[in-house]
Length: 157
Image (cartoon, rainbow, N blue to C red; front, side, top):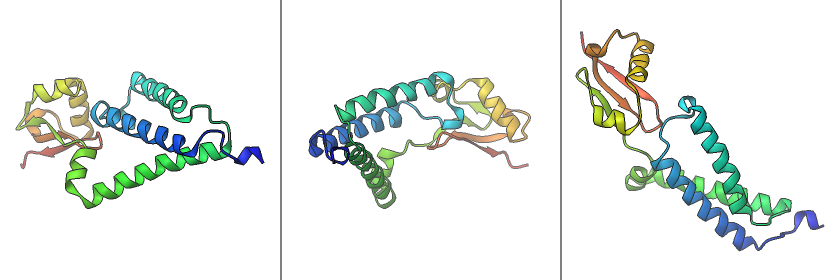
């Protein structure tokens, strides 16, 4: 049955999938940092376009179920390898996860870091309101975490 045979060499599918996985990983690791809940429309559009473009690069002229299954399995294996190695090896974790970034220290905005992550003062203030704080004076530390969330440590009363 042609539907379940390969239309492209399995090794080519694995190679294409691996190259695109690494390429996309590097883009998302070093370019996009915010979590999905904080993606703007431009960020979301970028992800959709990247997904479409990378699908074409990964699949070549793949036309069968076997081609698609092998491609998805290749991407899954790379994802599992990253997760396992990140869990077991701190050096790999430092590569796969962005470090936390200090945004506010002792009530003072760390402008270099805030600008680097393109976070506005309004976004910082909105996070303070979500945490029930009235101003920067109530903040000991505010950090952009590896997962893109912003955490707040209050000044001890």
